[in-house]
Length: 261
Length: 286
Figure 1 (cartoon, rainbow over the protein chains, first blue to last red):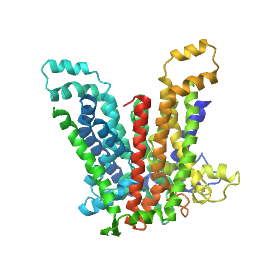
Figure 2 (cartoon, rainbow over the protein chains, first blue to last red):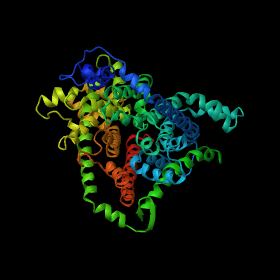
Figure 3 (cartoon, each protein chain N blue to C red):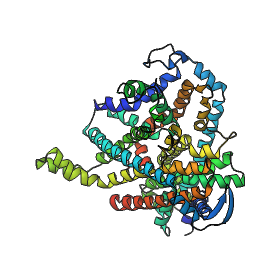
Figure 4 (cartoon, chains in turn orange, red):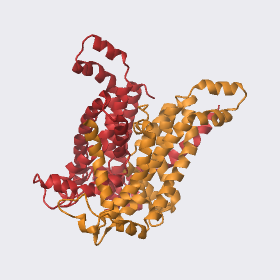
Protein backbone atom coordinates (compact mmCIF):
# COMPACT_ATOMS: atom_id res chain seq x y z
CA UNK A 1 0.00 0.00 0.00
CA UNK A 2 2.55 2.49 1.17
CA UNK A 3 4.81 1.59 -1.73
CA UNK A 4 2.03 2.04 -4.21
CA UNK A 5 0.91 5.37 -2.74
CA UNK A 6 4.41 6.83 -2.40
CA UNK A 7 5.56 5.74 -5.82
CA UNK A 8 2.35 6.91 -7.43
CA UNK A 9 2.53 10.44 -6.05
CA UNK A 10 6.11 10.80 -7.30
CA UNK A 11 5.83 8.90 -10.56
CA UNK A 12 2.43 10.03 -11.73
CA UNK A 13 3.30 13.58 -12.88
CA UNK A 14 6.41 12.22 -14.61
CA UNK A 15 4.39 9.58 -16.46
CA UNK A 16 1.83 12.16 -17.47
CA UNK A 17 4.59 14.41 -18.80
CA UNK A 18 5.97 11.44 -20.76
CA UNK A 19 2.61 10.89 -22.46
CA UNK A 20 2.51 14.56 -23.44
CA UNK A 21 5.70 14.09 -25.46
CA UNK A 22 3.88 11.75 -27.83
CA UNK A 23 0.44 13.34 -27.78
CA UNK A 24 -0.97 14.73 -31.04
CA UNK A 25 -2.12 18.35 -30.92
CA UNK A 26 -5.68 17.20 -31.60
CA UNK A 27 -6.12 15.51 -28.20
CA UNK A 28 -3.66 17.65 -26.23
CA UNK A 29 -6.37 19.82 -24.70
CA UNK A 30 -9.10 17.18 -24.47
CA UNK A 31 -11.54 17.46 -21.58
CA UNK A 32 -11.42 15.12 -19.76
CA UNK A 33 -7.67 14.49 -20.36
CA UNK A 34 -7.03 11.27 -22.30
CA UNK A 35 -4.43 8.55 -21.71
CA UNK A 36 -5.00 6.60 -24.93
CA UNK A 37 -4.16 8.18 -28.28
CA UNK A 38 -2.20 7.37 -31.46
CA UNK A 39 1.37 8.43 -30.58
CA UNK A 40 3.12 11.00 -32.75
CA UNK A 41 6.74 12.07 -33.22
CA UNK A 42 5.90 15.57 -34.49
CA UNK A 43 7.10 17.21 -31.26
CA UNK A 44 10.52 15.57 -31.65
CA UNK A 45 10.83 17.04 -35.15
CA UNK A 46 10.15 20.52 -33.80
CA UNK A 47 12.68 20.15 -30.97
CA UNK A 48 15.39 18.90 -33.35
CA UNK A 49 14.66 21.65 -35.86
CA UNK A 50 14.96 24.42 -33.28
CA UNK A 51 18.53 23.88 -32.09
CA UNK A 52 17.85 22.06 -28.86
CA UNK A 53 20.64 19.58 -29.61
CA UNK A 54 23.03 22.52 -29.42
CA UNK A 55 21.61 23.47 -26.02
CA UNK A 56 22.08 19.88 -24.90
CA UNK A 57 25.74 19.94 -25.94
CA UNK A 58 26.27 23.28 -24.17
CA UNK A 59 24.74 21.87 -20.99
CA UNK A 60 26.99 18.81 -21.19
CA UNK A 61 30.14 20.85 -21.82
CA UNK A 62 29.50 23.24 -18.94
CA UNK A 63 28.56 20.45 -16.51
CA UNK A 64 31.48 18.16 -17.44
CA UNK A 65 34.19 20.83 -17.48
CA UNK A 66 33.05 22.51 -14.27
CA UNK A 67 32.86 19.14 -12.52
CA UNK A 68 36.34 18.17 -13.72
CA UNK A 69 37.71 21.47 -12.44
CA UNK A 70 36.04 20.93 -9.09
CA UNK A 71 37.56 17.44 -8.75
CA UNK A 72 41.06 18.66 -9.59
CA UNK A 73 40.98 21.60 -7.17
CA UNK A 74 38.78 20.09 -4.50
CA UNK A 75 40.24 16.62 -3.92
CA UNK A 76 43.58 17.75 -2.42
CA UNK A 77 41.78 20.30 -0.24
CA UNK A 78 39.27 17.80 1.15
CA UNK A 79 42.10 15.38 1.92
CA UNK A 80 44.22 18.05 3.62
CA UNK A 81 41.30 19.18 5.79
CA UNK A 82 40.73 15.60 6.94
CA UNK A 83 44.33 14.56 7.49
CA UNK A 84 46.47 17.51 8.62
CA UNK A 85 46.32 19.98 11.48
CA UNK A 86 45.49 23.19 9.63
CA UNK A 87 45.39 26.50 11.45
CA UNK A 88 41.86 27.88 11.85
CA UNK A 89 40.55 24.74 10.16
CA UNK A 90 37.06 25.12 11.61
CA UNK A 91 36.75 28.69 10.41
CA UNK A 92 37.87 27.71 6.93
CA UNK A 93 35.38 24.84 6.82
CA UNK A 94 32.64 27.16 7.97
CA UNK A 95 33.58 29.50 5.11
CA UNK A 96 33.31 26.56 2.69
CA UNK A 97 29.89 25.60 4.07
CA UNK A 98 28.62 29.18 4.00
CA UNK A 99 29.64 29.39 0.34
CA UNK A 100 27.56 26.33 -0.40
CA UNK A 101 24.56 27.68 1.51
CA UNK A 102 24.79 31.17 -0.01
CA UNK A 103 21.54 32.24 -1.66
CA UNK A 104 22.00 32.15 -5.45
CA UNK A 105 20.11 35.40 -6.00
CA UNK A 106 22.47 37.32 -3.71
CA UNK A 107 25.41 35.82 -5.67
CA UNK A 108 24.16 36.30 -9.19
CA UNK A 109 23.72 40.07 -8.74
CA UNK A 110 27.43 40.83 -8.12
CA UNK A 111 28.45 38.15 -10.64
CA UNK A 112 26.39 39.86 -13.30
CA UNK A 113 27.87 43.29 -12.55
CA UNK A 114 31.45 42.01 -12.40
CA UNK A 115 31.06 39.91 -15.56
CA UNK A 116 29.54 42.85 -17.44
CA UNK A 117 32.64 44.85 -16.58
CA UNK A 118 35.28 42.21 -17.43
CA UNK A 119 33.50 40.76 -20.48
CA UNK A 120 32.73 37.31 -19.07
CA UNK A 121 29.00 37.45 -19.78
CA UNK A 122 27.85 34.76 -22.21
CA UNK A 123 31.15 32.85 -22.11
CA UNK A 124 31.85 29.24 -21.17
CA UNK A 125 34.65 30.33 -18.84
CA UNK A 126 32.33 32.70 -17.02
CA UNK A 127 29.63 30.13 -16.40
CA UNK A 128 32.10 27.41 -15.42
CA UNK A 129 33.79 29.71 -12.90
CA UNK A 130 30.42 30.77 -11.47
CA UNK A 131 29.52 27.10 -10.92
CA UNK A 132 32.53 26.76 -8.62
CA UNK A 133 30.64 28.70 -5.92
CA UNK A 134 28.14 25.96 -5.17
CA UNK A 135 29.96 22.90 -6.54
CA UNK A 136 33.49 23.36 -5.23
CA UNK A 137 32.21 24.04 -1.71
CA UNK A 138 29.81 21.10 -1.93
CA UNK A 139 32.54 18.79 -3.22
CA UNK A 140 35.08 19.72 -0.54
CA UNK A 141 32.51 19.43 2.22
CA UNK A 142 31.19 15.99 1.19
CA UNK A 143 34.52 14.48 0.11
CA UNK A 144 35.94 15.63 3.44
CA UNK A 145 33.43 13.31 5.13
CA UNK A 146 34.69 10.45 2.94
CA UNK A 147 38.34 11.32 3.68
CA UNK A 148 37.81 11.11 7.41
CA UNK A 149 36.81 7.48 7.02
CA UNK A 150 40.12 6.49 5.42
CA UNK A 151 42.38 4.44 7.70
CA UNK A 152 45.55 6.42 8.39
CA UNK A 153 47.62 3.24 8.91
CA UNK A 154 48.03 2.55 5.19
CA UNK A 155 49.40 6.03 4.62
CA UNK A 156 51.78 5.65 7.58
CA UNK A 157 52.99 2.32 6.21
CA UNK A 158 53.61 3.89 2.82
CA UNK A 159 55.51 6.75 4.46
CA UNK A 160 57.62 4.20 6.35
CA UNK A 161 58.40 2.56 3.00
CA UNK A 162 59.91 5.83 1.86
CA UNK A 163 57.01 7.36 -0.11
CA UNK A 164 56.89 11.15 -0.13
CA UNK A 165 53.69 12.95 0.94
CA UNK A 166 52.71 13.63 -2.65
CA UNK A 167 53.30 10.01 -3.63
CA UNK A 168 51.16 8.83 -0.71
CA UNK A 169 48.35 11.05 -1.94
CA UNK A 170 48.54 9.81 -5.52
CA UNK A 171 49.40 6.14 -5.00
CA UNK A 172 47.59 5.30 -1.75
CA UNK A 173 44.88 7.84 -1.00
CA UNK A 174 43.39 8.42 -4.45
CA UNK A 175 42.72 4.73 -5.21
CA UNK A 176 41.03 4.30 -1.82
CA UNK A 177 39.05 7.47 -2.28
CA UNK A 178 37.90 6.69 -5.81
CA UNK A 179 34.32 5.61 -4.96
CA UNK A 180 33.81 8.74 -2.88
CA UNK A 181 35.28 10.96 -5.58
CA UNK A 182 33.06 9.44 -8.27
CA UNK A 183 29.90 9.66 -6.16
CA UNK A 184 30.51 13.28 -5.15
CA UNK A 185 31.56 14.33 -8.65
CA UNK A 186 28.44 12.80 -10.18
CA UNK A 187 26.31 14.83 -7.79
CA UNK A 188 28.24 17.96 -8.80
CA UNK A 189 27.56 17.11 -12.44
CA UNK A 190 23.83 16.87 -11.69
CA UNK A 191 23.80 20.19 -9.83
CA UNK A 192 25.51 21.89 -12.77
CA UNK A 193 23.23 20.12 -15.25
CA UNK A 194 20.14 21.25 -13.31
CA UNK A 195 21.27 24.80 -12.62
CA UNK A 196 19.01 27.56 -13.91
CA UNK A 197 19.60 31.02 -12.43
CA UNK A 198 23.31 31.47 -13.20
CA UNK A 199 22.90 30.06 -16.69
CA UNK A 200 19.89 32.32 -17.25
CA UNK A 201 21.60 35.53 -16.06
CA UNK A 202 25.24 34.95 -17.04
CA UNK A 203 24.66 32.99 -20.25
CA UNK A 204 23.19 34.27 -23.49
CA UNK A 205 23.01 33.41 -27.17
CA UNK A 206 26.47 31.83 -27.29
CA UNK A 207 26.20 29.85 -24.05
CA UNK A 208 22.61 28.72 -23.72
CA UNK A 209 22.08 25.63 -21.58
CA UNK A 210 19.08 23.33 -21.92
CA UNK A 211 17.05 24.70 -18.95
CA UNK A 212 17.53 28.25 -20.22
CA UNK A 213 16.34 27.30 -23.73
CA UNK A 214 12.94 26.18 -22.43
CA UNK A 215 11.25 29.62 -22.68
CA UNK A 216 11.82 29.38 -26.46
CA UNK A 217 8.92 26.91 -26.40
CA UNK A 218 6.55 29.55 -25.14
CA UNK A 219 5.87 31.20 -28.49
CA UNK A 220 3.54 33.89 -29.72
CA UNK A 221 1.27 31.10 -31.00
CA UNK A 222 1.08 29.64 -27.51
CA UNK A 223 2.97 27.10 -25.42
CA UNK A 224 4.49 24.12 -27.26
CA UNK A 225 3.40 21.59 -24.61
CA UNK A 226 4.59 18.42 -26.32
CA UNK A 227 8.02 19.92 -26.96
CA UNK A 228 8.15 21.16 -23.36
CA UNK A 229 7.53 17.59 -22.21
CA UNK A 230 10.36 16.27 -24.39
CA UNK A 231 12.87 18.78 -23.01
CA UNK A 232 11.68 17.94 -19.49
CA UNK A 233 12.25 14.24 -20.12
CA UNK A 234 15.73 14.79 -21.55
CA UNK A 235 16.66 17.03 -18.62
CA UNK A 236 15.44 14.30 -16.27
CA UNK A 237 17.35 11.39 -17.88
CA UNK A 238 20.75 11.86 -16.18
CA UNK A 239 18.99 12.30 -12.84
CA UNK A 240 17.16 9.00 -13.28
CA UNK A 241 20.37 7.22 -14.21
CA UNK A 242 22.21 8.64 -11.20
CA UNK A 243 19.43 7.95 -8.73
CA UNK A 244 19.35 4.26 -9.50
CA UNK A 245 23.12 3.79 -9.55
CA UNK A 246 24.19 6.02 -6.67
CA UNK A 247 21.27 6.00 -4.28
CA UNK A 248 23.34 5.19 -1.20
CA UNK A 249 25.48 8.29 -1.62
CA UNK A 250 22.69 10.73 -2.40
CA UNK A 251 21.47 11.01 1.18
CA UNK A 252 24.97 11.82 2.30
CA UNK A 253 25.29 14.44 -0.42
CA UNK A 254 21.93 16.08 0.13
CA UNK A 255 22.41 16.27 3.90
CA UNK A 256 25.92 17.70 3.43
CA UNK A 257 27.51 14.63 5.01
CA UNK A 258 25.31 14.57 8.12
CA UNK A 259 23.96 11.14 7.18
CA UNK A 260 26.40 8.44 6.10
CA UNK A 261 23.82 6.68 3.92
CA UNK B 1 54.80 21.60 7.00
CA UNK B 2 53.73 23.72 4.06
CA UNK B 3 52.40 20.67 2.25
CA UNK B 4 48.82 20.74 3.66
CA UNK B 5 48.54 24.45 2.90
CA UNK B 6 49.68 23.86 -0.67
CA UNK B 7 46.86 21.33 -0.99
CA UNK B 8 44.13 23.68 0.20
CA UNK B 9 45.48 26.88 -1.37
CA UNK B 10 43.98 26.50 -4.89
CA UNK B 11 40.55 25.63 -3.52
CA UNK B 12 40.55 28.46 -1.01
CA UNK B 13 41.77 30.98 -3.57
CA UNK B 14 39.03 29.87 -5.95
CA UNK B 15 36.35 30.16 -3.26
CA UNK B 16 37.62 33.59 -2.24
CA UNK B 17 37.39 34.70 -5.87
CA UNK B 18 33.92 33.32 -6.56
CA UNK B 19 32.26 33.88 -3.17
CA UNK B 20 34.09 36.31 -0.91
CA UNK B 21 34.94 38.86 -3.62
CA UNK B 22 31.39 39.03 -5.00
CA UNK B 23 30.11 39.34 -1.42
CA UNK B 24 32.46 42.19 -0.51
CA UNK B 25 31.73 43.87 -3.84
CA UNK B 26 28.02 43.73 -3.04
CA UNK B 27 28.61 45.24 0.40
CA UNK B 28 30.66 48.03 -1.18
CA UNK B 29 28.04 48.70 -3.87
CA UNK B 30 25.25 48.74 -1.31
CA UNK B 31 26.91 51.71 0.38
CA UNK B 32 26.93 53.79 -2.81
CA UNK B 33 24.44 55.67 -4.90
CA UNK B 34 23.71 53.64 -8.01
CA UNK B 35 22.54 55.02 -11.35
CA UNK B 36 21.74 51.79 -13.18
CA UNK B 37 25.11 50.03 -13.20
CA UNK B 38 27.07 53.28 -12.68
CA UNK B 39 28.51 53.67 -9.20
CA UNK B 40 27.96 57.14 -7.73
CA UNK B 41 28.84 58.81 -4.43
CA UNK B 42 29.18 57.13 -1.08
CA UNK B 43 25.68 56.87 0.33
CA UNK B 44 26.16 55.35 3.76
CA UNK B 45 23.07 53.46 4.83
CA UNK B 46 20.69 55.28 2.49
CA UNK B 47 20.09 52.16 0.37
CA UNK B 48 19.29 50.14 3.47
CA UNK B 49 16.88 52.81 4.61
CA UNK B 50 15.19 52.69 1.21
CA UNK B 51 14.99 48.90 1.41
CA UNK B 52 13.54 48.82 4.92
CA UNK B 53 11.10 51.57 3.99
CA UNK B 54 9.82 49.64 1.00
CA UNK B 55 6.40 48.07 1.49
CA UNK B 56 7.14 45.71 -1.36
CA UNK B 57 10.19 44.37 0.51
CA UNK B 58 8.17 43.68 3.67
CA UNK B 59 5.48 42.06 1.58
CA UNK B 60 8.13 39.71 0.14
CA UNK B 61 9.40 38.93 3.65
CA UNK B 62 5.82 38.02 4.57
CA UNK B 63 5.45 35.80 1.49
CA UNK B 64 8.73 34.00 2.26
CA UNK B 65 7.73 33.54 5.89
CA UNK B 66 4.35 32.15 4.88
CA UNK B 67 5.96 29.82 2.35
CA UNK B 68 8.45 28.47 4.91
CA UNK B 69 5.90 28.25 7.73
CA UNK B 70 3.55 26.19 5.57
CA UNK B 71 6.00 24.04 3.62
CA UNK B 72 8.66 23.01 6.14
CA UNK B 73 6.39 21.69 8.96
CA UNK B 74 4.31 19.77 6.39
CA UNK B 75 7.41 18.28 4.81
CA UNK B 76 8.77 17.32 8.21
CA UNK B 77 5.55 15.75 9.52
CA UNK B 78 4.85 13.78 6.33
CA UNK B 79 8.53 12.89 5.95
CA UNK B 80 8.80 11.55 9.50
CA UNK B 81 5.63 9.53 9.08
CA UNK B 82 6.93 8.10 5.81
CA UNK B 83 10.33 7.32 7.33
CA UNK B 84 8.70 5.36 10.16
CA UNK B 85 6.63 3.38 7.66
CA UNK B 86 9.72 2.67 5.54
CA UNK B 87 11.66 1.67 8.62
CA UNK B 88 8.99 -0.79 9.72
CA UNK B 89 9.51 -2.44 6.39
CA UNK B 90 7.40 -2.27 3.27
CA UNK B 91 7.38 -4.58 0.30
CA UNK B 92 9.55 -3.58 -2.66
CA UNK B 93 11.46 -1.03 -0.56
CA UNK B 94 14.48 -1.53 -2.82
CA UNK B 95 12.45 -0.08 -5.71
CA UNK B 96 10.64 2.58 -3.72
CA UNK B 97 13.76 4.19 -2.25
CA UNK B 98 15.38 5.22 -5.55
CA UNK B 99 12.04 6.42 -6.88
CA UNK B 100 11.69 8.67 -3.84
CA UNK B 101 15.08 10.24 -4.60
CA UNK B 102 13.94 11.51 -7.97
CA UNK B 103 12.04 14.70 -6.96
CA UNK B 104 14.84 16.14 -4.81
CA UNK B 105 17.41 15.55 -7.57
CA UNK B 106 15.18 16.96 -10.28
CA UNK B 107 16.07 20.20 -12.06
CA UNK B 108 13.83 23.15 -11.18
CA UNK B 109 12.99 23.41 -14.86
CA UNK B 110 11.67 19.84 -14.83
CA UNK B 111 9.59 20.54 -11.72
CA UNK B 112 8.22 23.61 -13.44
CA UNK B 113 7.35 21.74 -16.66
CA UNK B 114 5.73 18.86 -14.73
CA UNK B 115 3.46 21.13 -12.75
CA UNK B 116 2.70 23.54 -15.58
CA UNK B 117 1.35 20.53 -17.43
CA UNK B 118 -0.47 19.06 -14.43
CA UNK B 119 -2.06 22.39 -13.54
CA UNK B 120 -2.56 23.82 -17.02
CA UNK B 121 -5.73 25.79 -17.66
CA UNK B 122 -8.84 23.72 -18.14
CA UNK B 123 -7.17 20.58 -19.49
CA UNK B 124 -4.41 19.86 -16.95
CA UNK B 125 -4.81 16.49 -15.28
CA UNK B 126 -5.06 17.97 -11.79
CA UNK B 127 -6.93 21.10 -12.85
CA UNK B 128 -9.62 19.10 -14.56
CA UNK B 129 -9.98 16.18 -12.19
CA UNK B 130 -9.56 17.84 -8.82
CA UNK B 131 -9.70 21.61 -8.83
CA UNK B 132 -12.66 21.97 -11.18
CA UNK B 133 -14.54 19.01 -9.78
CA UNK B 134 -14.49 20.54 -6.32
CA UNK B 135 -15.42 23.93 -7.67
CA UNK B 136 -12.14 25.56 -6.67
CA UNK B 137 -11.38 26.91 -10.11
CA UNK B 138 -12.94 27.15 -13.49
CA UNK B 139 -11.10 27.22 -16.80
CA UNK B 140 -7.90 28.78 -15.44
CA UNK B 141 -4.67 27.56 -13.88
CA UNK B 142 -4.37 27.64 -10.12
CA UNK B 143 -1.00 29.32 -10.73
CA UNK B 144 -2.82 32.30 -12.23
CA UNK B 145 -5.01 32.79 -9.18
CA UNK B 146 -3.81 35.52 -6.79
CA UNK B 147 -5.51 33.73 -3.88
CA UNK B 148 -4.31 30.20 -4.57
CA UNK B 149 -0.98 30.45 -6.40
CA UNK B 150 1.12 30.57 -3.23
CA UNK B 151 -0.59 27.48 -1.83
CA UNK B 152 0.00 25.69 -5.12
CA UNK B 153 3.71 26.55 -4.85
CA UNK B 154 3.77 25.30 -1.26
CA UNK B 155 2.12 22.06 -2.37
CA UNK B 156 4.69 21.64 -5.15
CA UNK B 157 7.54 22.26 -2.68
CA UNK B 158 6.01 19.66 -0.35
CA UNK B 159 5.75 17.24 -3.27
CA UNK B 160 9.39 17.80 -4.17
CA UNK B 161 10.99 17.75 -0.70
CA UNK B 162 8.94 15.43 1.51
CA UNK B 163 10.60 12.35 -0.05
CA UNK B 164 14.02 13.83 0.78
CA UNK B 165 13.07 14.37 4.45
CA UNK B 166 11.65 10.86 4.48
CA UNK B 167 14.82 9.26 3.12
CA UNK B 168 17.20 11.26 5.32
CA UNK B 169 15.24 10.33 8.46
CA UNK B 170 14.88 6.75 7.22
CA UNK B 171 18.67 6.48 6.86
CA UNK B 172 18.95 7.78 10.44
CA UNK B 173 16.42 5.26 11.74
CA UNK B 174 18.26 2.43 10.02
CA UNK B 175 21.50 3.30 11.79
CA UNK B 176 20.02 3.46 15.32
CA UNK B 177 21.54 1.00 17.81
CA UNK B 178 19.43 -2.15 18.32
CA UNK B 179 20.24 -2.78 22.00
CA UNK B 180 17.99 -0.14 23.65
CA UNK B 181 15.08 -1.32 21.50
CA UNK B 182 15.58 -4.92 22.64
CA UNK B 183 15.66 -3.71 26.25
CA UNK B 184 12.47 -1.71 25.72
CA UNK B 185 10.74 -4.76 24.22
CA UNK B 186 11.82 -6.89 27.21
CA UNK B 187 10.41 -4.26 29.56
CA UNK B 188 7.11 -4.42 27.70
CA UNK B 189 7.12 -0.84 26.40
CA UNK B 190 4.33 0.08 24.01
CA UNK B 191 5.08 1.23 20.48
CA UNK B 192 4.25 4.83 21.44
CA UNK B 193 6.48 4.72 24.55
CA UNK B 194 9.34 3.33 22.49
CA UNK B 195 8.90 6.06 19.91
CA UNK B 196 8.55 8.85 22.48
CA UNK B 197 11.32 7.75 24.88
CA UNK B 198 13.84 6.18 22.50
CA UNK B 199 13.40 7.13 18.86
CA UNK B 200 12.71 10.83 19.37
CA UNK B 201 15.71 11.54 21.64
CA UNK B 202 18.06 9.43 19.50
CA UNK B 203 16.88 11.12 16.31
CA UNK B 204 16.74 14.70 17.60
CA UNK B 205 20.16 15.75 16.23
CA UNK B 206 19.46 14.45 12.75
CA UNK B 207 15.96 15.90 12.75
CA UNK B 208 17.44 19.27 13.68
CA UNK B 209 19.89 19.12 10.78
CA UNK B 210 17.22 18.08 8.29
CA UNK B 211 14.84 20.82 9.42
CA UNK B 212 17.62 23.42 9.23
CA UNK B 213 18.54 22.34 5.71
CA UNK B 214 14.90 22.61 4.66
CA UNK B 215 14.54 26.02 6.31
CA UNK B 216 17.58 27.34 4.46
CA UNK B 217 16.47 25.86 1.14
CA UNK B 218 12.90 27.06 1.52
CA UNK B 219 14.11 30.55 2.20
CA UNK B 220 16.42 30.53 -0.83
CA UNK B 221 13.84 29.11 -3.18
CA UNK B 222 13.92 31.00 -6.45
CA UNK B 223 13.90 28.85 -9.59
CA UNK B 224 10.61 27.03 -9.22
CA UNK B 225 8.70 30.15 -8.21
CA UNK B 226 10.38 32.19 -10.95
CA UNK B 227 9.54 29.59 -13.58
CA UNK B 228 6.00 28.81 -12.42
CA UNK B 229 4.57 32.20 -11.48
CA UNK B 230 7.38 34.75 -11.83
CA UNK B 231 6.29 36.08 -8.44
CA UNK B 232 2.79 36.79 -9.67
CA UNK B 233 0.00 37.18 -10.27
CA UNK B 234 0.66 40.73 -9.09
CA UNK B 235 3.11 40.15 -6.28
CA UNK B 236 1.16 37.36 -4.60
CA UNK B 237 4.07 34.88 -4.75
CA UNK B 238 6.97 37.35 -4.66
CA UNK B 239 9.41 35.87 -2.11
CA UNK B 240 12.49 37.76 -0.91
CA UNK B 241 14.62 36.09 -3.59
CA UNK B 242 12.21 37.19 -6.30
CA UNK B 243 12.05 40.68 -4.86
CA UNK B 244 15.85 40.97 -5.06
CA UNK B 245 15.86 39.61 -8.60
CA UNK B 246 13.12 41.93 -9.84
CA UNK B 247 14.66 44.96 -8.18
CA UNK B 248 17.78 44.41 -10.27
CA UNK B 249 16.66 42.96 -13.54
CA UNK B 250 13.19 44.48 -13.88
CA UNK B 251 13.53 47.84 -12.14
CA UNK B 252 17.30 48.34 -12.32
CA UNK B 253 17.30 49.75 -8.80
CA UNK B 254 20.74 48.42 -7.92
CA UNK B 255 21.07 50.38 -4.69
CA UNK B 256 18.07 48.73 -3.05
CA UNK B 257 18.88 45.39 -4.68
CA UNK B 258 22.45 45.21 -3.41
CA UNK B 259 21.28 46.22 0.06
CA UNK B 260 18.71 43.43 -0.14
CA UNK B 261 21.38 40.98 -1.29
CA UNK B 262 23.51 41.88 1.72
CA UNK B 263 20.56 41.44 4.08
CA UNK B 264 19.84 38.02 2.55
CA UNK B 265 23.50 37.15 2.79
CA UNK B 266 23.79 38.07 6.47
CA UNK B 267 20.77 35.88 7.21
CA UNK B 268 22.54 32.97 5.58
CA UNK B 269 25.75 33.44 7.50
CA UNK B 270 23.67 33.26 10.64
CA UNK B 271 21.74 30.24 9.34
CA UNK B 272 24.78 28.26 8.25
CA UNK B 273 26.62 29.08 11.45
CA UNK B 274 23.68 27.73 13.41
CA UNK B 275 23.61 24.67 11.14
CA UNK B 276 27.32 24.06 11.59
CA UNK B 277 27.27 24.45 15.37
CA UNK B 278 24.12 22.36 15.74
CA UNK B 279 25.40 19.57 13.53
CA UNK B 280 28.76 19.54 15.28
CA UNK B 281 27.39 19.58 18.80
CA UNK B 282 24.42 17.31 18.27
CA UNK B 283 25.80 14.83 15.79
CA UNK B 284 29.47 14.96 16.56
CA UNK B 285 29.48 14.70 12.78
CA UNK B 286 32.16 17.12 11.81
